[in-house]
Amino acid sequence: MPQLVLAVIVGCAVCQIGIFCTTVYLHRTVAHRALTLAPSVRLVFRVLVWITTGIRPRQWAAVHRKHHAFTDVEGDPHSPHLQTTGRCPRLRGALHAHAGWLLRAPATDVGRWAPDLAGDPDLVMLTRLFPLACAVSLGAPALLGWAISGTGAGALGGLVWGGLVRVFVLQQATFAVNSACHLWGRRPFRTREQDRATNLAVLSVLSMGESWHNAHHASPRTARHGVDRGQLDSTARLIQALERCRLVSQVRWPTPESLDARRVEAGQRERSASVLTRSAAVGRSGTHRRWTRSAPAGPGT
Ligand SMILES: [Zn+2]
Ligand SMILES: [Zn+2]
Image 1: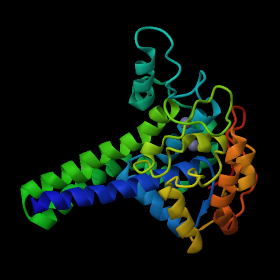
Image 2 (image 1 turned 120 degrees about the vertical axis):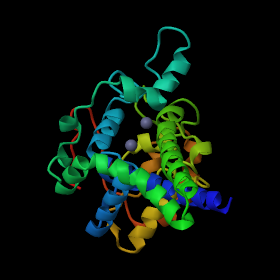
Image 3 (image 1 turned 90 degrees about the vertical axis):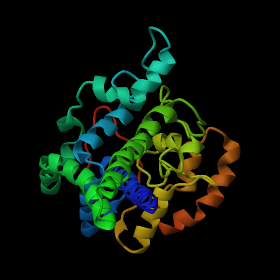
Image 4 (image 1 turned 180 degrees about the vertical axis):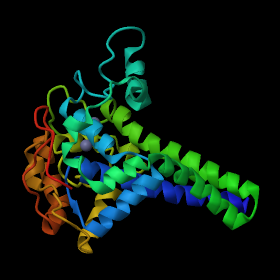
């Protein structure tokens, strides 16, 4: 039993690292350019993404930028709102947005949506080593379990909890934002007309703040998604800590003015002003540019 507890603890820790790699590095840094990582931190994140998730960063960024450009209209790779015919369209849409799109959606043109990442030697090398990443991602927890316990059962526990369960939980955190955060929740900020992105508080802990998805779609290039009082955004907290240590720069924090310009309810303006005072002091946001259907590329990492 102690070995099982240890395996679960290790699995949870690695899972948390993997989700942070997705939120800080893949999403807010690579896909949206909301901050710039110091070279040493960038290398750490790249290696950790490679080991903990096996995700190809350029492919991930391309799909995500396309999602922002075509949110909930034809062309969106994983919208739950495009299934309008047949039986149970809402359920089928939810399943498609959660994971079904991985099997059914047409391949995203990476050259069009992520041209800025094409010549990055680190990413090219890590993409080539993708099979090795999968082997390390699953093999390392098993090896760790064996090293700690000295038994085959320990190795199996490490593989199951530190490998398979960890990958499953990590994927659900990302998939849930794609599906649930376009179906249920509040929409306090204005987005494009057909954009149905929502704020879903119940997912904020598991998603590390990514479930404040309506706020994110309203201002995609800002580094904080949980912008109101009590909205947990552990990814923004980590970015703030890295900024204090001078390990990240050019962080695009939202300002009360930029949020008020997007708010649906004018009565909520005072709340954002009070909550964001400290953020505004840490770093002022620059211009907010969102990925558009005609101009997806951005500056280099
Ligand atoms: Zn979305
Ligand atoms: Zn995004």
